[in-house]
Image (cartoon, rainbow, N blue to C red; front, side, top):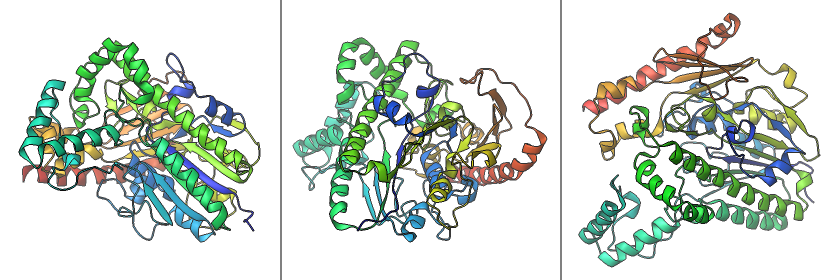
Length: 496
Protein backbone atom coordinates (compact mmCIF):
# COMPACT_ATOMS: atom_id res chain seq x y z
CA UNK A 1 0.00 0.00 0.00
CA UNK A 2 1.37 3.41 -0.97
CA UNK A 3 2.21 6.02 1.63
CA UNK A 4 -0.11 8.99 2.09
CA UNK A 5 2.85 11.38 1.98
CA UNK A 6 3.05 13.37 -1.27
CA UNK A 7 5.89 12.79 -3.70
CA UNK A 8 8.22 15.76 -4.21
CA UNK A 9 9.72 16.68 -7.59
CA UNK A 10 12.17 19.59 -7.59
CA UNK A 11 13.28 20.71 -11.06
CA UNK A 12 16.14 23.18 -11.39
CA UNK A 13 16.81 24.65 -14.84
CA UNK A 14 20.36 25.96 -14.97
CA UNK A 15 20.63 29.66 -16.00
CA UNK A 16 16.87 30.15 -16.33
CA UNK A 17 16.23 33.82 -15.59
CA UNK A 18 12.91 35.39 -14.65
CA UNK A 19 13.37 38.35 -16.98
CA UNK A 20 11.95 36.41 -19.94
CA UNK A 21 8.71 35.72 -18.07
CA UNK A 22 8.02 38.76 -15.91
CA UNK A 23 9.95 41.65 -17.46
CA UNK A 24 10.43 40.70 -21.10
CA UNK A 25 12.22 42.96 -23.56
CA UNK A 26 10.52 42.23 -26.83
CA UNK A 27 8.74 38.97 -27.52
CA UNK A 28 8.14 36.57 -24.62
CA UNK A 29 9.12 32.93 -25.25
CA UNK A 30 6.21 30.60 -25.99
CA UNK A 31 5.75 28.50 -22.83
CA UNK A 32 2.22 27.04 -22.92
CA UNK A 33 2.97 24.38 -20.27
CA UNK A 34 4.47 26.79 -17.73
CA UNK A 35 1.63 29.24 -18.38
CA UNK A 36 -0.98 26.55 -17.65
CA UNK A 37 0.88 25.27 -14.60
CA UNK A 38 1.12 28.78 -13.17
CA UNK A 39 -2.68 29.10 -13.12
CA UNK A 40 -2.99 26.27 -10.56
CA UNK A 41 0.20 26.94 -8.59
CA UNK A 42 1.86 29.37 -6.25
CA UNK A 43 3.95 31.68 -8.40
CA UNK A 44 6.69 33.63 -6.64
CA UNK A 45 7.36 36.60 -8.87
CA UNK A 46 10.33 37.85 -6.85
CA UNK A 47 12.33 34.71 -6.11
CA UNK A 48 16.05 35.38 -5.74
CA UNK A 49 18.94 32.93 -6.19
CA UNK A 50 21.33 32.53 -3.22
CA UNK A 51 24.36 32.98 -5.48
CA UNK A 52 25.34 33.72 -9.06
CA UNK A 53 26.63 30.26 -10.03
CA UNK A 54 25.66 26.66 -9.54
CA UNK A 55 27.81 25.22 -6.75
CA UNK A 56 27.13 27.74 -3.96
CA UNK A 57 23.57 28.29 -5.10
CA UNK A 58 22.64 24.59 -5.14
CA UNK A 59 24.43 24.08 -1.83
CA UNK A 60 22.12 26.76 -0.39
CA UNK A 61 19.07 25.11 -1.98
CA UNK A 62 20.07 21.80 -0.36
CA UNK A 63 21.07 23.13 3.07
CA UNK A 64 19.14 26.36 3.74
CA UNK A 65 22.45 28.16 4.38
CA UNK A 66 24.06 31.16 2.70
CA UNK A 67 27.34 30.60 0.79
CA UNK A 68 29.44 32.12 3.61
CA UNK A 69 27.81 29.59 5.96
CA UNK A 70 28.02 26.35 3.96
CA UNK A 71 31.40 27.42 2.42
CA UNK A 72 30.90 25.52 -0.82
CA UNK A 73 32.28 28.36 -2.93
CA UNK A 74 35.08 26.86 -5.02
CA UNK A 75 35.10 24.06 -7.56
CA UNK A 76 37.22 21.91 -5.19
CA UNK A 77 35.19 22.71 -2.03
CA UNK A 78 33.41 20.00 -0.07
CA UNK A 79 30.28 20.29 2.04
CA UNK A 80 30.97 19.57 5.71
CA UNK A 81 29.47 16.28 6.89
CA UNK A 82 27.74 17.87 9.89
CA UNK A 83 25.56 20.03 7.62
CA UNK A 84 22.32 18.16 6.83
CA UNK A 85 21.03 18.22 3.25
CA UNK A 86 17.47 18.24 1.98
CA UNK A 87 17.95 14.76 0.47
CA UNK A 88 19.14 13.40 3.83
CA UNK A 89 16.15 14.89 5.63
CA UNK A 90 13.74 13.47 3.04
CA UNK A 91 15.39 10.07 3.32
CA UNK A 92 15.18 10.12 7.13
CA UNK A 93 11.45 10.77 6.80
CA UNK A 94 10.79 7.72 4.65
CA UNK A 95 11.36 9.01 1.10
CA UNK A 96 13.13 7.30 -1.77
CA UNK A 97 15.64 9.96 -2.90
CA UNK A 98 16.88 10.06 -6.48
CA UNK A 99 18.82 12.65 -8.49
CA UNK A 100 18.78 12.99 -12.29
CA UNK A 101 21.27 15.62 -13.38
CA UNK A 102 22.95 17.04 -16.44
CA UNK A 103 25.10 19.21 -14.14
CA UNK A 104 28.44 17.57 -13.15
CA UNK A 105 28.71 19.69 -9.97
CA UNK A 106 25.94 17.60 -8.38
CA UNK A 107 28.11 14.73 -7.12
CA UNK A 108 29.02 12.72 -4.02
CA UNK A 109 32.60 14.04 -3.96
CA UNK A 110 31.65 17.61 -3.06
CA UNK A 111 28.77 16.49 -0.85
CA UNK A 112 25.88 17.91 -2.90
CA UNK A 113 24.60 14.44 -3.75
CA UNK A 114 24.78 13.25 -0.14
CA UNK A 115 21.50 11.67 0.91
CA UNK A 116 20.44 10.48 -2.54
CA UNK A 117 19.82 6.74 -2.80
CA UNK A 118 20.49 6.91 -6.52
CA UNK A 119 22.36 9.42 -8.67
CA UNK A 120 22.11 9.48 -12.47
CA UNK A 121 24.46 12.02 -14.06
CA UNK A 122 24.01 12.64 -17.77
CA UNK A 123 26.86 15.09 -18.28
CA UNK A 124 28.96 14.08 -21.31
CA UNK A 125 27.26 10.70 -21.36
CA UNK A 126 28.68 9.59 -24.71
CA UNK A 127 29.91 6.10 -25.47
CA UNK A 128 32.75 6.59 -27.96
CA UNK A 129 33.14 3.86 -30.61
CA UNK A 130 36.93 3.55 -30.15
CA UNK A 131 38.71 3.42 -26.81
CA UNK A 132 42.22 2.13 -27.60
CA UNK A 133 45.01 3.77 -29.58
CA UNK A 134 43.12 7.09 -29.65
CA UNK A 135 43.56 10.55 -28.14
CA UNK A 136 41.36 11.80 -25.30
CA UNK A 137 38.82 13.95 -27.15
CA UNK A 138 37.33 15.26 -23.91
CA UNK A 139 40.55 17.16 -23.20
CA UNK A 140 40.88 18.83 -26.58
CA UNK A 141 41.17 22.63 -26.36
CA UNK A 142 40.24 24.06 -29.70
CA UNK A 143 41.87 27.28 -30.91
CA UNK A 144 39.73 30.40 -30.65
CA UNK A 145 40.02 31.27 -34.34
CA UNK A 146 37.88 30.67 -37.39
CA UNK A 147 36.44 27.38 -38.60
CA UNK A 148 39.36 26.73 -40.97
CA UNK A 149 41.90 26.85 -38.12
CA UNK A 150 39.71 24.58 -36.00
CA UNK A 151 39.55 21.99 -38.78
CA UNK A 152 43.30 22.31 -39.27
CA UNK A 153 43.79 21.72 -35.54
CA UNK A 154 41.56 18.61 -35.60
CA UNK A 155 43.49 17.09 -38.49
CA UNK A 156 46.81 17.87 -36.80
CA UNK A 157 46.05 16.33 -33.38
CA UNK A 158 44.31 13.34 -34.97
CA UNK A 159 47.43 12.60 -36.98
CA UNK A 160 49.93 13.11 -34.15
CA UNK A 161 48.42 10.85 -31.50
CA UNK A 162 46.85 7.43 -31.98
CA UNK A 163 45.00 6.16 -35.02
CA UNK A 164 44.10 9.00 -37.39
CA UNK A 165 40.78 7.61 -38.67
CA UNK A 166 39.63 6.43 -35.23
CA UNK A 167 40.40 9.87 -33.78
CA UNK A 168 38.33 11.63 -36.44
CA UNK A 169 35.37 9.32 -35.84
CA UNK A 170 35.59 9.76 -32.06
CA UNK A 171 35.77 13.54 -32.39
CA UNK A 172 32.73 13.56 -34.66
CA UNK A 173 30.70 11.31 -32.34
CA UNK A 174 31.67 13.24 -29.21
CA UNK A 175 30.92 16.70 -30.59
CA UNK A 176 27.74 15.49 -32.22
CA UNK A 177 26.22 13.69 -29.24
CA UNK A 178 27.63 15.03 -25.97
CA UNK A 179 25.92 17.79 -24.01
CA UNK A 180 28.75 20.04 -25.14
CA UNK A 181 28.52 18.95 -28.75
CA UNK A 182 28.11 21.54 -31.48
CA UNK A 183 25.53 19.47 -33.38
CA UNK A 184 23.98 17.83 -30.32
CA UNK A 185 20.21 17.41 -30.66
CA UNK A 186 19.54 18.70 -27.16
CA UNK A 187 21.50 19.25 -23.94
CA UNK A 188 20.20 16.23 -22.10
CA UNK A 189 16.54 17.02 -21.37
CA UNK A 190 15.17 14.33 -23.69
CA UNK A 191 17.37 11.60 -22.23
CA UNK A 192 16.84 12.75 -18.63
CA UNK A 193 13.04 12.97 -18.93
CA UNK A 194 12.84 9.56 -20.62
CA UNK A 195 15.01 8.04 -17.88
CA UNK A 196 12.82 9.55 -15.16
CA UNK A 197 9.68 8.19 -16.80
CA UNK A 198 11.23 4.71 -16.93
CA UNK A 199 12.30 5.00 -13.30
CA UNK A 200 8.83 6.05 -12.11
CA UNK A 201 7.22 3.19 -14.00
CA UNK A 202 9.54 0.74 -12.20
CA UNK A 203 9.05 2.48 -8.83
CA UNK A 204 5.28 2.07 -9.01
CA UNK A 205 5.66 -1.70 -8.99
CA UNK A 206 8.54 -2.00 -6.53
CA UNK A 207 8.20 0.71 -3.88
CA UNK A 208 5.72 1.37 -1.11
CA UNK A 209 7.27 4.71 -0.14
CA UNK A 210 7.01 8.21 -1.67
CA UNK A 211 9.86 9.61 -3.74
CA UNK A 212 11.86 12.81 -3.78
CA UNK A 213 13.28 13.53 -7.22
CA UNK A 214 15.82 16.27 -7.83
CA UNK A 215 16.16 17.05 -11.54
CA UNK A 216 18.82 19.42 -12.90
CA UNK A 217 18.43 20.40 -16.56
CA UNK A 218 20.99 22.27 -18.67
CA UNK A 219 18.95 23.51 -21.64
CA UNK A 220 19.24 27.20 -20.76
CA UNK A 221 22.93 27.02 -19.85
CA UNK A 222 25.53 28.18 -22.36
CA UNK A 223 26.62 27.35 -24.98
CA UNK A 224 23.76 28.39 -27.29
CA UNK A 225 24.20 26.45 -30.50
CA UNK A 226 22.69 27.74 -33.75
CA UNK A 227 22.49 24.24 -35.21
CA UNK A 228 20.91 22.42 -32.28
CA UNK A 229 17.83 20.51 -33.51
CA UNK A 230 15.21 22.97 -32.23
CA UNK A 231 17.22 25.96 -33.53
CA UNK A 232 18.13 24.43 -36.88
CA UNK A 233 15.36 25.87 -39.07
CA UNK A 234 15.61 29.25 -37.33
CA UNK A 235 19.36 29.35 -37.97
CA UNK A 236 19.02 28.30 -41.61
CA UNK A 237 16.40 31.00 -42.22
CA UNK A 238 18.77 33.49 -40.56
CA UNK A 239 21.91 32.12 -42.18
CA UNK A 240 23.69 35.50 -42.48
CA UNK A 241 23.17 36.24 -38.79
CA UNK A 242 24.16 32.65 -37.95
CA UNK A 243 27.50 32.99 -39.74
CA UNK A 244 28.11 36.39 -38.17
CA UNK A 245 27.29 34.94 -34.75
CA UNK A 246 29.75 32.09 -35.22
CA UNK A 247 32.49 34.51 -36.26
CA UNK A 248 32.03 36.87 -33.31
CA UNK A 249 30.35 35.65 -30.14
CA UNK A 250 31.64 32.09 -30.43
CA UNK A 251 35.20 33.41 -30.18
CA UNK A 252 34.74 35.07 -26.78
CA UNK A 253 31.54 33.35 -25.70
CA UNK A 254 31.22 33.09 -21.90
CA UNK A 255 34.96 32.91 -21.23
CA UNK A 256 36.68 34.10 -18.06
CA UNK A 257 38.07 37.07 -20.03
CA UNK A 258 34.58 38.54 -19.82
CA UNK A 259 35.47 39.53 -16.25
CA UNK A 260 38.43 41.70 -17.18
CA UNK A 261 38.09 42.69 -20.82
CA UNK A 262 35.39 44.59 -22.65
CA UNK A 263 33.97 43.17 -25.87
CA UNK A 264 31.71 44.96 -28.27
CA UNK A 265 29.04 42.88 -29.98
CA UNK A 266 26.77 44.07 -32.74
CA UNK A 267 23.17 44.61 -31.54
CA UNK A 268 21.86 42.31 -34.25
CA UNK A 269 24.11 39.48 -33.01
CA UNK A 270 23.06 40.06 -29.40
CA UNK A 271 19.43 39.89 -30.47
CA UNK A 272 20.17 36.62 -32.29
CA UNK A 273 21.85 35.23 -29.15
CA UNK A 274 18.86 36.15 -26.99
CA UNK A 275 16.53 34.49 -29.49
CA UNK A 276 18.59 31.29 -29.26
CA UNK A 277 18.22 31.48 -25.48
CA UNK A 278 14.43 31.90 -25.78
CA UNK A 279 14.30 28.86 -28.05
CA UNK A 280 16.05 26.88 -25.33
CA UNK A 281 13.28 27.96 -22.93
CA UNK A 282 10.59 26.92 -25.42
CA UNK A 283 12.21 23.51 -25.87
CA UNK A 284 12.51 23.10 -22.11
CA UNK A 285 8.82 23.96 -21.76
CA UNK A 286 7.89 21.19 -24.22
CA UNK A 287 9.98 18.60 -22.38
CA UNK A 288 8.52 19.60 -19.00
CA UNK A 289 5.04 19.46 -20.50
CA UNK A 290 5.70 15.91 -21.72
CA UNK A 291 6.87 14.88 -18.25
CA UNK A 292 3.88 16.43 -16.48
CA UNK A 293 1.49 14.79 -18.92
CA UNK A 294 3.04 11.44 -17.98
CA UNK A 295 2.55 12.18 -14.26
CA UNK A 296 -1.10 12.96 -14.92
CA UNK A 297 -1.56 9.75 -16.91
CA UNK A 298 -0.19 7.74 -13.98
CA UNK A 299 -2.47 9.44 -11.47
CA UNK A 300 0.48 11.08 -9.72
CA UNK A 301 -0.46 14.71 -10.38
CA UNK A 302 -2.68 14.99 -7.30
CA UNK A 303 -0.22 13.33 -4.96
CA UNK A 304 2.94 15.19 -5.92
CA UNK A 305 4.53 18.53 -5.01
CA UNK A 306 5.89 19.80 -8.32
CA UNK A 307 8.45 22.62 -8.18
CA UNK A 308 10.17 24.43 -11.06
CA UNK A 309 12.92 26.97 -10.47
CA UNK A 310 16.54 27.82 -11.38
CA UNK A 311 19.89 27.91 -9.58
CA UNK A 312 20.66 31.37 -11.03
CA UNK A 313 20.00 33.50 -14.09
CA UNK A 314 22.10 34.54 -17.06
CA UNK A 315 23.49 37.75 -18.48
CA UNK A 316 23.18 38.05 -22.24
CA UNK A 317 25.14 41.27 -22.70
CA UNK A 318 22.65 43.43 -20.75
CA UNK A 319 25.61 44.85 -18.82
CA UNK A 320 28.25 44.41 -21.53
CA UNK A 321 29.14 40.88 -20.45
CA UNK A 322 28.12 37.29 -21.10
CA UNK A 323 27.55 34.59 -18.51
CA UNK A 324 26.64 34.74 -14.86
CA UNK A 325 29.35 33.86 -12.37
CA UNK A 326 30.51 37.27 -11.09
CA UNK A 327 27.64 39.55 -12.01
CA UNK A 328 25.09 40.58 -9.39
CA UNK A 329 22.30 42.09 -11.49
CA UNK A 330 18.65 41.07 -11.73
CA UNK A 331 19.24 39.00 -14.85
CA UNK A 332 21.65 36.86 -12.79
CA UNK A 333 19.72 36.62 -9.53
CA UNK A 334 16.00 37.00 -10.28
CA UNK A 335 14.67 33.53 -11.12
CA UNK A 336 11.31 31.82 -11.71
CA UNK A 337 9.72 29.81 -8.90
CA UNK A 338 6.53 27.80 -9.39
CA UNK A 339 5.23 25.50 -6.65
CA UNK A 340 2.36 23.19 -7.58
CA UNK A 341 0.88 21.54 -4.49
CA UNK A 342 -1.29 18.38 -4.64
CA UNK A 343 -4.44 20.50 -4.56
CA UNK A 344 -5.30 23.35 -6.92
CA UNK A 345 -4.33 26.21 -4.62
CA UNK A 346 -2.98 29.12 -6.60
CA UNK A 347 -1.74 32.59 -5.88
CA UNK A 348 0.78 35.14 -7.14
CA UNK A 349 3.17 36.12 -4.35
CA UNK A 350 4.83 39.41 -5.17
CA UNK A 351 7.49 39.83 -2.51
CA UNK A 352 11.17 38.90 -2.31
CA UNK A 353 11.97 35.35 -1.18
CA UNK A 354 15.31 33.52 -1.23
CA UNK A 355 15.67 30.11 -2.82
CA UNK A 356 17.89 29.16 0.11
CA UNK A 357 14.64 28.90 2.09
CA UNK A 358 13.09 26.39 -0.30
CA UNK A 359 14.14 23.31 1.75
CA UNK A 360 12.61 24.85 4.88
CA UNK A 361 9.42 25.59 2.92
CA UNK A 362 9.19 22.01 1.60
CA UNK A 363 9.82 20.37 4.96
CA UNK A 364 7.48 22.82 6.68
CA UNK A 365 4.67 21.84 4.31
CA UNK A 366 5.41 18.16 5.02
CA UNK A 367 5.40 18.88 8.79
CA UNK A 368 8.88 17.41 9.33
CA UNK A 369 10.70 18.03 12.56
CA UNK A 370 14.17 18.65 11.17
CA UNK A 371 17.30 20.77 11.48
CA UNK A 372 17.05 22.53 8.13
CA UNK A 373 17.53 26.25 8.89
CA UNK A 374 15.73 29.11 7.24
CA UNK A 375 12.25 30.59 6.94
CA UNK A 376 9.24 29.02 5.28
CA UNK A 377 7.63 31.14 2.57
CA UNK A 378 4.42 29.15 2.31
CA UNK A 379 1.52 31.59 1.72
CA UNK A 380 0.29 31.28 5.31
CA UNK A 381 3.82 32.12 6.59
CA UNK A 382 4.76 34.82 4.09
CA UNK A 383 3.75 37.71 6.34
CA UNK A 384 6.41 36.68 8.88
CA UNK A 385 9.10 36.20 6.24
CA UNK A 386 12.21 38.46 6.59
CA UNK A 387 12.02 41.90 4.96
CA UNK A 388 15.27 41.43 3.03
CA UNK A 389 16.89 38.71 0.91
CA UNK A 390 20.64 38.10 0.49
CA UNK A 391 22.75 36.61 -2.29
CA UNK A 392 26.49 36.03 -2.03
CA UNK A 393 29.32 35.08 -4.35
CA UNK A 394 32.98 34.81 -3.35
CA UNK A 395 34.60 33.25 -6.40
CA UNK A 396 34.07 32.88 -10.11
CA UNK A 397 34.55 29.16 -10.89
CA UNK A 398 36.16 29.47 -14.32
CA UNK A 399 38.40 32.31 -13.23
CA UNK A 400 39.75 30.52 -10.17
CA UNK A 401 40.15 27.16 -11.88
CA UNK A 402 42.24 28.74 -14.62
CA UNK A 403 44.49 30.32 -11.99
CA UNK A 404 44.86 27.06 -10.04
CA UNK A 405 45.28 24.72 -13.00
CA UNK A 406 48.48 25.43 -14.90
CA UNK A 407 47.33 23.21 -17.78
CA UNK A 408 44.55 25.66 -18.69
CA UNK A 409 45.92 28.96 -17.42
CA UNK A 410 46.60 29.92 -21.06
CA UNK A 411 43.10 31.39 -21.06
CA UNK A 412 44.59 34.30 -19.06
CA UNK A 413 47.95 34.62 -20.81
CA UNK A 414 48.85 38.14 -21.77
CA UNK A 415 46.99 39.73 -18.85
CA UNK A 416 48.98 41.27 -16.01
CA UNK A 417 48.33 39.52 -12.68
CA UNK A 418 47.64 42.90 -11.04
CA UNK A 419 44.70 43.33 -13.40
CA UNK A 420 43.51 39.82 -12.55
CA UNK A 421 43.89 40.49 -8.83
CA UNK A 422 41.93 43.71 -9.15
CA UNK A 423 39.03 41.80 -10.68
CA UNK A 424 38.99 39.07 -8.04
CA UNK A 425 36.17 40.60 -6.03
CA UNK A 426 33.22 39.05 -4.24
CA UNK A 427 29.78 40.50 -3.86
CA UNK A 428 26.79 40.74 -1.55
CA UNK A 429 23.40 41.46 -3.07
CA UNK A 430 20.53 42.72 -0.90
CA UNK A 431 16.88 42.93 -1.99
CA UNK A 432 14.83 45.08 0.37
CA UNK A 433 11.59 47.00 -0.06
CA UNK A 434 11.60 47.78 -3.79
CA UNK A 435 15.36 48.25 -4.04
CA UNK A 436 18.30 46.09 -5.08
CA UNK A 437 21.60 46.90 -3.32
CA UNK A 438 24.88 45.52 -4.71
CA UNK A 439 27.91 45.68 -2.42
CA UNK A 440 31.23 44.50 -3.88
CA UNK A 441 34.38 43.75 -1.90
CA UNK A 442 36.31 46.12 -4.19
CA UNK A 443 34.35 48.97 -2.60
CA UNK A 444 31.80 49.56 -5.34
CA UNK A 445 28.16 50.00 -4.30
CA UNK A 446 25.20 50.10 -6.67
CA UNK A 447 21.52 50.62 -5.88
CA UNK A 448 18.63 50.13 -8.30
CA UNK A 449 14.88 50.47 -8.20
CA UNK A 450 13.62 46.92 -8.85
CA UNK A 451 10.13 48.07 -9.79
CA UNK A 452 10.91 51.07 -11.99
CA UNK A 453 14.39 50.25 -13.29
CA UNK A 454 14.47 46.47 -13.68
CA UNK A 455 17.26 46.59 -16.27
CA UNK A 456 19.38 48.51 -13.73
CA UNK A 457 20.60 51.44 -15.75
CA UNK A 458 20.28 54.21 -13.14
CA UNK A 459 22.49 53.77 -10.06
CA UNK A 460 20.67 55.61 -7.25
CA UNK A 461 23.71 55.53 -4.89
CA UNK A 462 21.46 55.26 -1.83
CA UNK A 463 22.41 53.78 1.52
CA UNK A 464 20.77 50.75 3.04
CA UNK A 465 18.40 51.56 5.92
CA UNK A 466 20.40 51.48 9.15
CA UNK A 467 18.34 48.66 10.68
CA UNK A 468 19.02 46.43 7.65
CA UNK A 469 22.68 47.46 7.35
CA UNK A 470 23.43 46.38 10.91
CA UNK A 471 21.82 42.98 10.31
CA UNK A 472 23.84 42.21 7.17
CA UNK A 473 27.14 43.71 8.34
CA UNK A 474 28.38 40.38 9.70
CA UNK A 475 27.67 38.63 6.37
CA UNK A 476 29.58 41.28 4.43
CA UNK A 477 32.58 41.06 6.77
CA UNK A 478 32.69 37.26 6.32
CA UNK A 479 32.51 37.75 2.56
CA UNK A 480 35.40 40.23 2.56
CA UNK A 481 37.60 37.96 4.68
CA UNK A 482 36.95 35.00 2.36
CA UNK A 483 37.74 37.21 -0.63
CA UNK A 484 41.04 38.39 0.89
CA UNK A 485 42.13 34.78 1.51
CA UNK A 486 41.15 33.83 -2.03
CA UNK A 487 43.23 36.64 -3.52
CA UNK A 488 46.36 35.85 -1.51
CA UNK A 489 46.21 32.13 -2.30
CA UNK A 490 45.46 32.59 -6.01
CA UNK A 491 48.14 35.21 -6.63
CA UNK A 492 50.75 33.09 -4.85
CA UNK A 493 49.85 30.22 -7.20
CA UNK A 494 50.20 32.45 -10.24
CA UNK A 495 53.63 33.66 -9.17
CA UNK A 496 54.81 30.11 -8.53
